Image 1: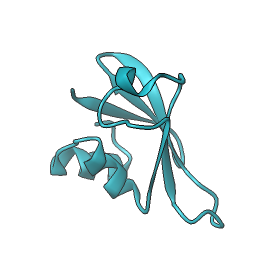
Image 2: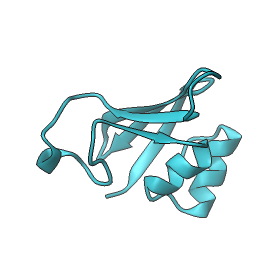
Image 3: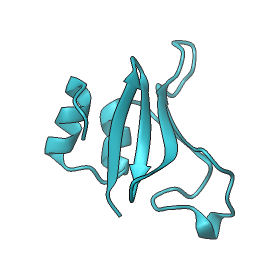
Image 4: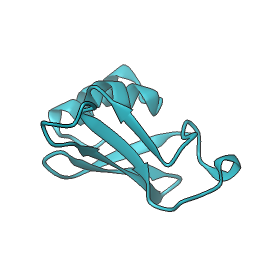
Amino acid sequence: MTYRVRKLAAGSYDLILNGVIVAGLVRNDIDHPATWTAELLVDLPAYLMPPPFTASEHHFPSLEEACKWLGLSADEVMYVMRGSPA
């Protein structure tokens, strides 16, 4: 499964899988211990969650780590980090 990441606004992205927005990726406020959160838009039982999701939310210390977790290539991570669509 290959995800695409589409920037919505500063610190906010759609996670698109097979042409469908399935999750969001957002930067948390400065007081939150994890900087980024990927969250499925629909609560699903674990066996129906698209990989790599194993829970409805996953937290990451950086945008780069979140992109790597989604399986994006190094080039795709660079596009996302620069603000271009991946």
